[in-house]
Amino acid sequence: MRQTITPTGSPTPGPISPPGSATRALWMPMVDSGGQRQRLALAAARHPVRVLLAAVLVGAVICAGVVAVIGGFNDAGKVKGDEIGDAKASKKSTPFTESTAGDCLTWPEELPTSQSLVDCTQEHMFEVAGAVDTAAYPGIQFGEDAPWPGPEQFTIIRDEHCPAVVNTYLGGKLDPAGRFSIGLMYPSAEQWADGERTLRCGLQLSGTTGTLKPFLGHVRDQDQSQQWPSGTCIGIDMETRKPTDPVDCTEPHSFQVTAVIDLGLKFGPAGSPWPNVDEQNTYLQSTCPGVTDQFLGGNDKLDQTTLNLQWSTLTEPSWLAGSRKVVCYIGLPDQGGFATLVGDAKGSLLINGVVPTPPPAEPPGRLNPTPVPLPPGVEANPLETPAPAGGGGG
Image (cartoon, rainbow, N blue to C red):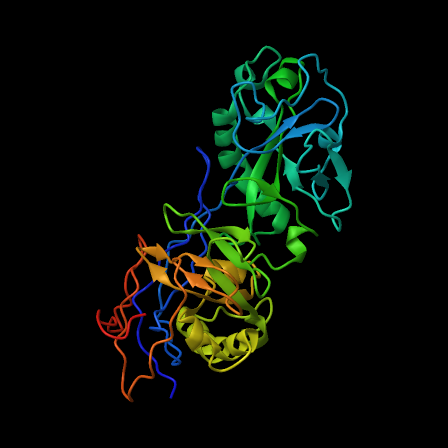
């Protein structure tokens, strides 16, 4: 018999962001199945809509087409840990200064000094949405003798101007909880001194530490949902117990994706009304168990892992931006976050360093699993009765 209970929430996968950056969050509802065969429904849980800005500013060093992109920035505008640029640089045409809205820029991850314009169907690091009109700023800020603004001032410029530039570029279709964030490319201190004032707003894909990652295609042409292929394991921050970026499943991780579900097949394509969280949960409650059984290779495999089956949902702003994909995944709540998993759930699995031991079969009747903690800013559904603490938790 499949059983339905009311969970009380989940830990929020909070990424690590560099100073001065906005935080990207993916709401992943979690339920506690106690390791039993019964699948648990998910109660409606809402989270604040967040305007996502860049996880890291992209500094354009206009010298031989150089772009500084990795990690934080020092006072000279160079990337920490990397010597990029040339103190004798001069203002000249480069792929960055030649770029216009719709262009894509790339560089090798290990060699950001090798910048080039590429067709957006190829892997790239930055999609240009448009230029910042520096004429809107006082001459004292962008005039010939103006001092280099520095990362903090460029962050303010990004936050003030780039959301509007990107919104216009995408026709208002940026998913505020999606994979892509808003970035700004700007001259280094050396190039600024040589007269370069080019600024470009654009879109980027970054990990939880702010490191940029390559992506394919124009953002406007793809589903922006947070999603990973079936079988992907998502790393864990051992201090906060929050999810990080995809890792090999042999490494410590927080959860494993069992399927990607296209809600558009059930609730309609672009222009269709948003299905509220209750509607999404009802559908995913009947969908995720079957695809997870298929992923694991049998109807009893989930019980053997002692993991819980969970899924993500889409907010209305994400839906209106065109996002339709959610993920089914398996993991366990632990200490206000996720338990540490090592190994593929289809093979040898450790949970907090221990081989999982499936519990004995439960007698007929309702289970009372341990409630899952609510993340900051999320309230329990007032229409539901929270699951009590105590017996049945795994």
